Amino acid sequence: MLNKYEHLDEEQFWDIMDDCFPEELDIDYAADKLSERSEDEIIRFHNTLAEITERLQDIKIFDADGSLLNSSDAELYVKCFIVANGKAFYNGILADAEFDASDETDEFEDLLDLTEDTLNLKGLEIDYNKLREMV
Image 1: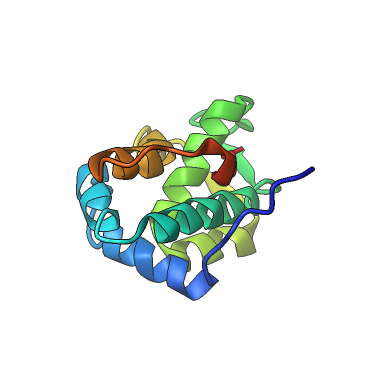
Image 2: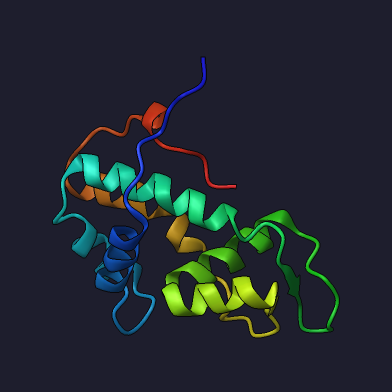
């Protein structure tokens, strides 16, 4: 039987992202802000994050030499960077269907650990059956 993951309304998701990353990509600040929310809301945030990130699967990501990125891990880290930069940035990349990731700072792997870090910060046990995998 497949898990039915709970999600946030998309506008609520982007509001939380804006709250967590108001000026810079600071994962500690984001975990502190997200920890102000309930466990259920954190889990739904995570599942929405996974879904939003997955929508970027068809964009072309180019590296420093102009070739397509060919590492699934590197692609995921770049997608996390795109999402963490907010709704307008994300929608622009979706519309363009490509992203130039030639700058080393165009990755944000830490976003993958935000949910676990936040739940740990709150002293809560992590139920991975409720969390959609980030791919």
